[in-house]
Image 1 (cartoon, rainbow, N blue to C red):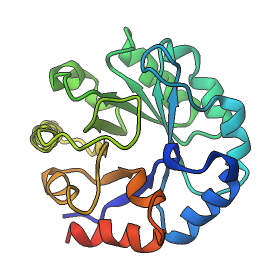
Image 2 (cartoon, one colour):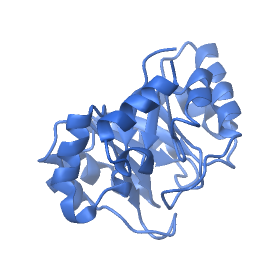
Image 3 (tube, rainbow, N blue to C red):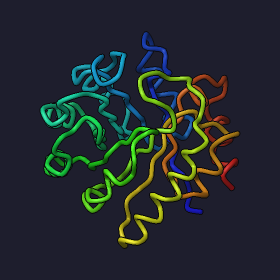
Length: 219
């Protein structure tokens, strides 16, 4: 198995201490910072807009993996890229012209990705895979942190890995939702290489140990 990258989700951070939280994640050995953007329409919650991300960008050198759980994502690609997004994921369920949006993300200089909900078929992203730097598999239904891992997500990761290999692509598989040392190994064996973790890292008293525990669970 390739080494995994751990992407703590700042949805689980203390919003009153975001600069300190980012410094803590960097010191703990995080590889990427996962930023969940919600609009209150596509998912029933509201989180970060471009001005907040622009300020957070000043506080860390870690890449920002911005997950757009929003409608009309095509209108916001440039704003989030300008704010500091390094990776941008859009939901196949919310974007009518997926290829066009992925192309716009790539042209902005960010790494383009498509996110897909647990109940959505991989067939909907098959034609878009050549334009994806990464695919973000949701292993919970999006909108809230702290949910339980959906076990069927492992088989979905395996099938996606086969699709990527069959096309000779290098698309990265990322997974988000309920991942912890007790659940992470099987998805990684199936092909996941970027692990998004919220409470498993940010809820731990020792974040470096929590990140190490995720990596150790996959060996």
